[in-house]
Length: 271
Image 1 (spheres, rainbow, N blue to C red):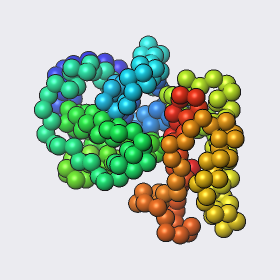
Image 2 (tube, one colour):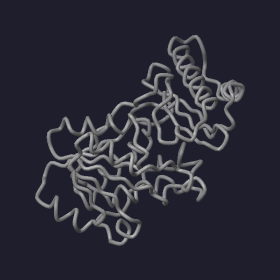
Image 3 (cartoon, one colour):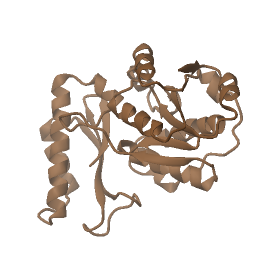
């Protein structure tokens, strides 16, 4: 396992490696990250994991400062997973060069999380674009819990003709159904139970909609979730899984996309 904090040293090391599988993270590693890494290792090339808490994708400084970090624990886990390369850049190292490709922001970037978190997706695309420019990976592995993010990264790569393939990986969940997330570490036991109730409610809601036993009423759905203990809901919408547009009928393969708060902790999911 080789650790790099300098882009120049990293590039020198990987210059002639053509089959790199890249897993971008902000640290606070969990079972979801482990799943992405193991998937990347099954592709037989070298696996490179980045750890960088990107300030440009946070809307509030307090949220950025409160984001769970434990680099020592992350490195122990990555060593156990036998990772080939780890890149832990400083802000200056990753933002102090001119990129080859201009960011392409698909119109979807203004919807859902993009509507409620101004500049969030631009911040995400900015850092991913820089990583792709530096590393030039053959594959990038992304979890579909952040399906909006994965969709926009895929659109950017396609539009800019970047020679990297996006590998979407399934959402890994805790035993109580809550999607694995670094932010879960900020939840207390009571909040974690509420999050579980939210997921169970949404799974049941989706089942009823598919069986045509229920219509989707966002107002009443929000009321139900508030009654379960949710503090605030940014959005809850039915979205086609592939096109990320509102489904025209219930026969389409759709997901329920949600962003909700438990106190000041924001969680996202798609069921």
